[in-house]
Amino acid sequence: MIFKEKKLILIKNLRLTTKLVTTYTLLTVLPMAFLGFIAYWQYTKSIEEEVGEYIPRLVKQVNGNIENDIQKLETLPDLIYNSGDVMAILRDSQSKKKSVLLHDEYIMKSYLTRTYLNNNSSHILGAFLVSKNRTFASTSLHYDSFGFEDGSLPYADDLGLLGEMQLLLPNQTNLTFEGDPSYFMLVKTITDFDNRKNLGTLYIAIDVAFFEQSLQDLQKEENVTMWIMNKQGKIIYHKDHSKIGTVEKGIQDYPLLNGSFRTEIDGKRNLISISESNELPWVLVHSMPIKNMTEKTDVIRNVTIFVFILFTLITTLISIFFAWTVTRPLNELGDIMKRVEKGDLLVDIPIHSEDEVGMLANSFRSMLAEIRELIHKNYHIELRKKTAELYALQSQINPHFMYNTLETIGMAVEEGESDEVVKMVTLLGRMMRFSISNKESLVPINSEVQHIEDYLSIQQFRFEDRLHFTIEKGADVVNYYIPKFVLQPIVENSIKYGLEKRKEIDIQIHISEEETQTGEEYLLLIVSDNGPGMTESKLIELNEKLRLDPMMKRDSGFGIINVNARIGMMFGEQYNLQINSEYGKGTSVIIRLPKINAQQVSMYVQGEEKNRDDTKGQDGHCR
Image (cartoon, rainbow, N blue to C red; front, top):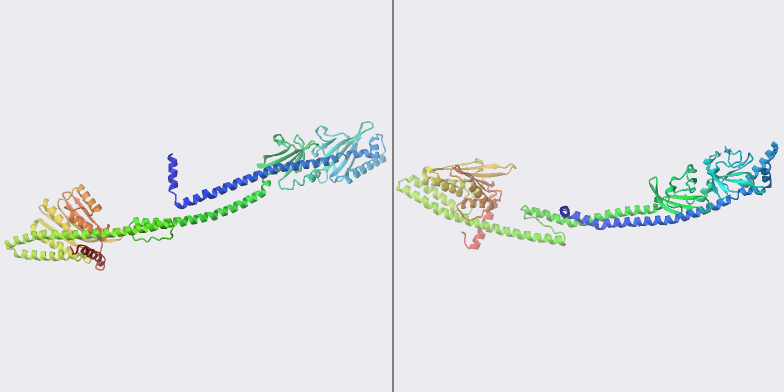
């Protein structure tokens, strides 16, 4: 069950192109291939069956023709009885002079030549008549080693019968002819019908071409083999003459002696067709490789396979093309979605068609446009909120700070410290001018530093020796701009929480230019104090709030959170505020800001002014 579920998951995870091409293959190519195989198999089988029925009929017909030819040969020995001179010579047993013997031999040879070699089949190689230790011979070829001097029938126990005659194979004699042709011999005893005495034996040597003439039509095809054998398997004739006289061992395994059957010979499938002679003691065998029967079918099969492969390739390419036309816009849409996922909301979504994919792309384009509009609206809403909070912060800080400062100035007047009064009034006036100039959201670093230095100097008049501060800035950062009031809320927190639990507080402000490992340059503002610090849990909680919830409700950290939110809104999430603190040792606030020169200020100021105009237009006045 688990294996099936995993298999289904793997199938589901395949690419759409793979699924489409695989589906095409399963529904088109495989059924066509299967049907083609079944058709070829059935057609081949039907051909084998038809040939298996047709060949035995031909073999039987050929066997009948051979029987007729053999029956004609059976009359040849009887021609001896038609010659009175020949019969007289055979019957004469008296001793004769040499001249008479030569005359008898001449008569016998002339008769054998005239009767068997000239007037009969051209396949007769020779005729031999053995009588009373005499041999009369007439041959068309020179011969050697006939060797039957006593007139007896050699190898009589091993002879085959052909009607009233007997069959003698070449391996049963020593007789050879010039050119070493294959032959068989018909043997018949010449009997004197008057007294039933044996007058001699007639041997007729017949070339195996006698059989080949009858079998030539069936042996024309390549690899077709035919042979004649007796029922015991001894081969009388074979296409391969070297096998004549040998025994066909497989005859014991033949399932029948009339008809066809399939068998395997030398590793090849063959169709064996057999016809048993009705008149003669032999069996005619026809062997043909099955591939011969299906040769033309194989050609058609090969052509069909070629056409099928070509068709499959073409249709597969077409299916891949159509699958690509379907999946390409989907892949493009997927790539665009990944870009949107990474924050690129300004991507262009091309629509190539009006099908389902085109409808999907159109819907995604509409959705993305709506998201951009919502983000734009939300951005301005949040920016207006932060601007309003900044103004509210200024309006809350300034009266409270002015009250404490004026109270300090009043005490200095009462004590007659006129120089300190003048200095505090000067510093306060400069701070007021900086505070009420609300047009700029970005100010030069020197202006922000001057403002925080004035603020700390006034606080130093108030707290006297309890407050110490130092400000360090690199010479290379004076030409850059930073957000207004980015340092004052942090310094206020340091003074407030530091003097609550410390007799003295030392505040250090450091401004420098830094560079990341990737070569990106930025400004680093660090405000450090030796105040009471924070516990680790409190520090983690505060940093988490800064990271996840910059728009959190007002609390004691409102100023710091406001600064962090403004930085994120103006420059992006990569610029932010981070707090490091150790309980009992102090706190450091690290601010990362982009390097903004005078030429780049307009980019950020325009957005701020537009936001301020929107706010004024909605409320009827500028807050």
